[in-house]
Amino acid sequence: MKMDLKKLFDTVGASEPIDCSLDFSKESLYGYAPFQQPVRVTGKIENRAGVVRLVFSVKSDLSLRCDRCLKAFEKPVAYTFSHILVRELSGEDDDTEFVVCADGQLDLGELARADLLLELPTKVLCSEDCKGLCPKCGKDLNFGPCECKKDIDPRWQALSDLFS
Ligand SMILES: [Zn+2]
Ligand SMILES: [Zn+2]
Image: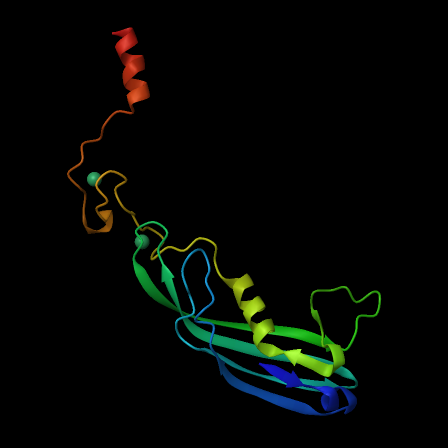
């Protein structure tokens, strides 16, 4: 979603509301697509004394999969991001807070996407104490223990045979 901010850059006191819904459903992360639901973006771009600041919030329900038990679940998330928009970087401004809008153009979709991906957890659990799946029979141990015997690791078995 591209925005033309040429006028806003040139007009002190100008502001532009943001209220849109973005579709990142094709975005995949760790082998699945977390953005099955639309991402709502609301906020404002404001030129205050020549400094153009963008503040926006994103809200969505993430479609996640537990790393331990593989259960699919949805998690509502809301994040707020803030950036200073500049038309070009001036030497010292190498802060990541600054977003360069070449020719006064801002790709809000791309920025929201990048911000959002940085916020996503790398480890996803359906609950903190998820017991996961049995590595042998694949049973979901959250629903109770499985029938597998607690086998001794064959390497230890060989060692204990040696000493018996
Ligand atoms: Zn789980
Ligand atoms: Zn088992």
